[in-house]
Length: 504
Image (cartoon, rainbow, N blue to C red; front, side, top):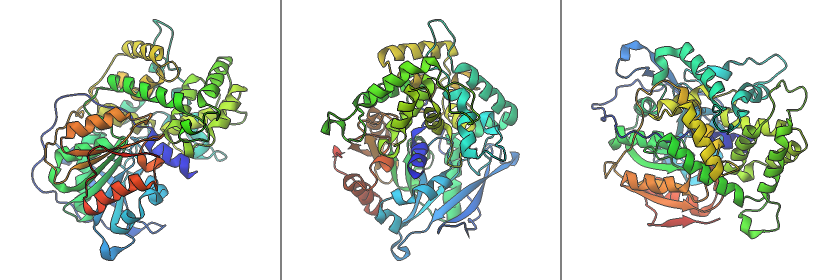
């Protein structure tokens, strides 16, 4: 289902980073062979760009980056190239662009060649296949059916353990980290956003443009900010939709996200947006609480699903985050809650698995946590993570504990980051102000981050979207206010007025 696919592309977003050190920008032009495009169906063309695994030692090998292009609908009035990153991290940009091309405003589709790619370690760009991604499918089981079972050890990890007990997520994430290190060794630290930004510049050169426009969603905003830091003169326009603050440590980000998700759940009502417009509509928290009370009795997926792991409150929390990310596109959440309260948790398991599932149904746990943890210097111990989960659960009793697993995940047991991200202050280094789209009620990337990122960049303009869900791209597609500001900026570089707001 298209709606679910887009939720997956934006809801799983990792977290901030938190180190003050940052790399100097590289000097000199990039020399790359032009992309050799060929038709790949649906009006798209595809190609590959070679990039060094290690930019500091190019002779150590290369990675072939898979790239896709949607030509402008009005080539005679074509402005240039818009490169799109859907976030994740770990998701296929190629598959997402195929599924989501219609979400771009019509004038943008008309005036730009829209290009996307699978970042290193994802999709068709040397995808990491460690941890549950190695779970095979049988001749009678599709990848989509196998996906929930393959990530079940992670989704089913309880968000909070008893006082003094180990962090429940530590075990499955330690197994994931051990398998990824065993399989990839010295190459694993190079699956990160800093090197993906360098890859992005090679793609720019291979496409044959001196500058390009960029749209990043959720975790993709970190790529946009990192590219701005490394190559400020090579962008024409940058849109950051649902931004993550690169200066914030993962532990602090978990606290912000816990508050935002809890507030979004408290306000959520089925079938009515905004909730205040229909106060008698059934509230989401009531059904959430009913399912939460039933889970300790051990609801399991339905028979024949090949998934023997009991559904827990961890599945409930992740499924709820999937729903809160795009309520209008997740109609199966309410039935899943009802069935869970009656003893069948299979619907919750499937929705929870979408946080770590690519569009082809395969797990992205390996690339998701490789990128997230390789981008961050934050390495709290499992004991500290357990304590933080209990603290946040006391403050935000429904979703607070899950924020630690959602934002920290494998990082407490991951190897030290080689090149973590950090705070970036552009202060006029880019040719045009950046456009930041922040969601006032965003449950995944809190609106406070959008305000912080706007201030940190120094040369950026914030548009605040009022309404539910994560990112304007998913939840405000076709909204004349959001698309109007975005189109005017991308097409004519018209910056919105200070304090611009869009209400549903």
